[in-house]
Image 1 (spheres, rainbow, N blue to C red):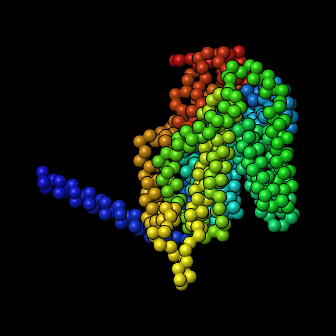
Image 2: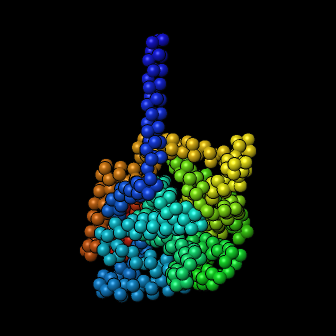
Image 3: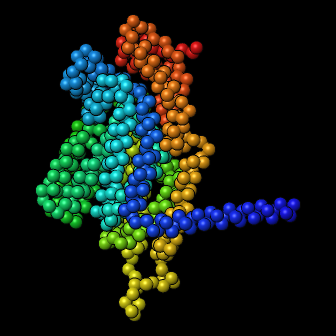
Length: 533
């Protein structure tokens, strides 16, 4: 027995030493890599992580509300083959919806123009558009905040944003709603992306020293703000709050640029009012059995739910990525020339903006947790997490230091605050911390028991085991039946396989189900239902 225990101990020691040596080598290599090259590596990693999601998009098809919102446009397209006539029909439907159903005049117009109305086989465009729009808008906004507002160099801000986006798309709350479903992603992800671009444009007009460039960015912000005002209410309310804060900031800090901030604020607010005051909103509320909370209670509950979801959206994977970024952020903000004087106010402001995104559904429906809404709130949470972390690190790295007799800025450990001590730890052990976190990240991705935990792994799994191909073949067979004018009573076999990321559900055995009715009306059938065979 003693010999066996000694052998096991030797194996443990060798494994521990091997792991330690591996971490040390990675640490030395990470420290030796220029930041620009690290940014390139992070960008490559992010793009590679998206490839399985886009590949799975090859098997994407029309679903859920796409049928209801696209029916009239599809009929016009089939009758005329005219894109112009189809767009006009989409706008006419939009006006009808505004009077009778909902006020989101931009979203409803775009949702009627589902690409699959014109060609059923181009569903792959949906994930391309949604990923490109959200990823690029987040990258542009986040990089701008890091560089302009926090004083981080270009390469460092690019590295941080590529890592953040890589993390976000791996743990996305609802991939189907945020990537593959045209209707849901257009209403929330696309509109949130437009808002991120609009906010970047407003901020650029503040920072631009050239008058022509500043007014150019202002004009872009005005146009995009009108679009945001006609989108979903979650993004719209968020935009109103952030723009109000920017107006207040401009009044205090730079009144010369006040008009450039007020113009997009006013146009966005007018668009938002046109949205919420639509006659269709009142008619819809009369038909809706869901009842929300009062305005005051909705606001109070928003703060509670924000904390709950912040915890929910910070699993081990996110924590490891956050730890990985800490040494980099410390080095970046330490070299910044910004003052970082108000960390508490910045933290409270970020928390309030995040919390406000829960208010509309609490007020209208008395609930939170709608998957298509959660995607954009989750993205805002990760942005806030990284930016607030960077701001606090900047605050601690720029605190006034005691000078010794020789004029150095060294500070004794006895007089060093906890934040400054943590900064010293990041400087000394940053490379090793990064190395350990990198190993953990790839270990979690590869060795996770549930292969559907991370989106890229789940997409690869569905493609490798044939689920995606089988689903697409059966979906195309259904479409062949739908478009067969001789078949009016449609009875379908249920899907035999569905990719985990395509969690849209199937048609019902009840032909009166709302989704069955949507398909029935879209293809002009007597009925459509699923039958067990």
